[in-house]
Each structure stands twice: as C-alpha cells, then as structure tokens.
Amino acid sequence: MAGHSKFANIQHRKGRQDKLRSKQFAKLSKEIAVASKLGGPDPDGNPRLRLAIANARGLSMPKDNIQRAVSKGQAGDGEDYFEIRYEGYGPGGVAVIVEALTDNKNRSASNIRAAFTKNGGQMGETGSVGFMFDRVGEIIYPASAGDEDTVMEAAIEAGADDVTSDAADVEEGKHTIICNFEDMNDVATNLEAALGEPESVNPSWKPQNTVPVDEDKASTLMKLIDALEDDDDVQKVYSNFDIDDEVLAKLSS
Image (cartoon, rainbow, N blue to C red; front, side, top):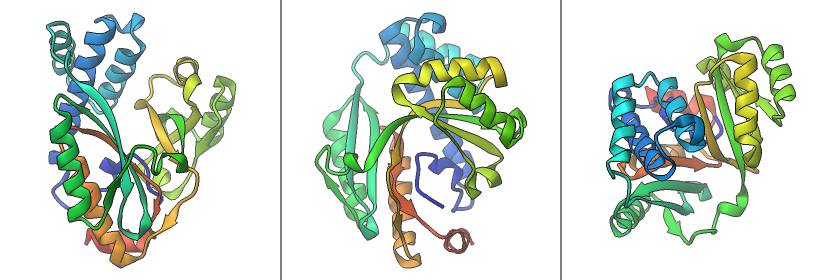
C-alpha cells in the first residue's frame, strides 16, 4: 500500500476504530469552527465551510455536532488557530508532511518533533520534503456512486486529472478522484451534479514517487504515523511510503 493522507483507513491496530472516529469528529469540528469564523456561517458563500461540512457528512458526523461547530466559530472559537505545515523524514528515508491547526505553535512543534524523534524519524525545516509532492485536490466517492467506467467518464467531464484504482481503493470500496488544486471546488461541484455528494473533498499532497519500506522499518513507521495522527493539533498526515500488503497484514495480526 502506498502512503497517503487517509491513514484512518489503515486499521493496522485492533480497537482503534472508535478512538479514530472520535478524533476525526474533534478535528472536523475544529476545521468547521475555523471555516465558519473566517468565512461566515453560510456554506453556499463559504467554500471552505462547504467542504468541511461535506467531509463531516461523509463520516456520518451528526447534524447537531456540525451546527454546534458552526455556531462556535461565529461565537469566536477558532479565532486564534494557526495553520502550520511540518515536514520531516520517517524510518527508511520516507518523507512525511504534517498539517496542523493549532492555538499554540510551541506546543505543536514540540509534540510533533517528539513524535518523529521517538519513532525513528527526524523533523526538518518547512520545504525539506515538500518538493517531493504535488499539491492536488482529492475527491472521494463510495463504490455505490457507480462502476469504474461511469466514475471515470464523470471525472473527465468534470475536469479531473485521474481516478485511482489501486488495491486499497478497491478493498475499501471507493473511488479517489485527483484534480488540480486550483480547480478542486469547480471539479467537486461538477461531480456532485453527476454522481451526487462525495464522501470527502480535500486538498492533498500527492507523492511524486514512493519509497519501498521493508517489514522492520514498516513497524516503526506505522508507530510514527499513529503518534502523529493521535496528536489533537494534527489534521492530516501525508507520506510517500510503499509497504507490501503482506507486510501490512502481518502488522495487523
């Protein structure tokens, strides 16, 4: 499996589903509050809020939770949050990008640096690995949206660049559509008219190349990813690892 941002889908440790779901809701609530604060409470006139709400719905976040987050943003919550990107290397020379939304830069930097150090990695300067990735838009649909040909045709008509069909997507029952970052909102709108509401619409960092990771390094790498994902300030993690499915199966046993 190649590394990407959707580490919540890599359930390589039993019993993590509920914990991950709770953290996902908390992070989505923070993003909704910040988007509401910055662009207003009307999703029709606030693209960032519209995307955040669509992502929350895609994960079956209750409507009351969504509205509460919007209201918190209007009440001032999210006023002092900063968006920060951290970069570094994990075990085996794997490149890692961490996106955080925090009200305390010193705390976030300290916690993320510690996660790298304790799990065989090293945090670098901003830009130290970013050149290995392309900034893209990533739109995810469930398998029920249509077969591969139907989704591909809709994606082309909507102005997307690619529809991935790797083993992970097939196993998870979804279609991942990639487009230019600048065109993401327009492509998402066109796709929604053709295929219905997506599970998620997000900017993403797509690795230009992947780095093979052996079983020994993979175990430590997954611990690093876990530690980063578990941090309350971290919104998303991206990487360029490539781990054999058999190795992942062993790690999950």
